Image 1 (cartoon, helix red, strand yellow):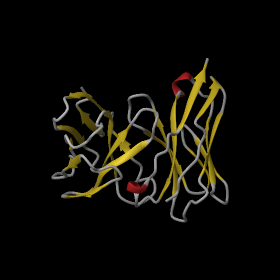
Image 2 (cartoon, helix red, strand yellow):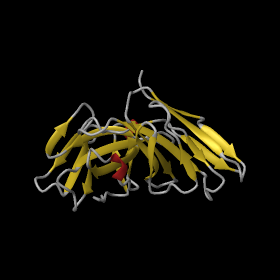
Image 3 (cartoon, one colour):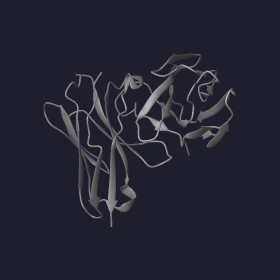
Image 4 (spheres, one colour):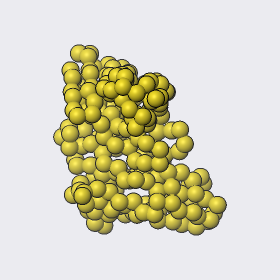
Amino acid sequence: DGGITQSPKYLFRKEGQNVTLSCEQNLNHDAMYWYRQDPGQGLRLIYYSQIVNDFQKGDIAEGYSVSREKKESFPLTVTSAQKNPTAFYLCASSLQGSPGANVLTFGAGSRLTVL
Amino acid sequence: LAKTTQPISMDSYEGQEVNITCSHNNIATNDYITWYQQFPSQGPRFIIQGYKTKVTNEVASLFIPADRKSSTLSLPRVSLSDTAVYYCLVGDPFSNYQLIWGAGTKLIIKP
């Protein structure tokens, strides 16, 4: 079955450490996205990529970094510069453009807790 | 960018039809209306998308009036498993990165 795989599902980090969250899709989607979700709130866009080797900052990119070396993969690194990283992180993908094709497919999420 | 307003929470009972209304007064000509469902500790899941009038699929219907300033998600004969948060999003299909996610509507279905 096609879909998006995020790992790990749960991650604990000590302050000052960088951590990388994995996101892999086999849907042949062009665009990929990283969102952050805090309790009781909607999703906020961290980074997005519409094509391999290109990515753009979203609304809350500070303290995060990404790469898009392969179409299938869009890892997110939470750096020590992110002051409040404890959150639920969601990766999504979509085709580009036309209605219906643009709907977002999400992974199951990664929950990061800073100790 | 079109922002949306929807109720924070709603309650209903099993077997009832549930209608969740979303207001989007500044919707643009190119914008489509999309609804997602999210269960706790899971990623959102696409429910339905529409541009105008009525759209129906196997799980829901979406009603959009002629002025497109609001929309209503209709869930027929809900069950306990429909308890979730429902998000209404408005945006250009070519610009998913511009979507604004509000807090959604927390729907609680009671037995």
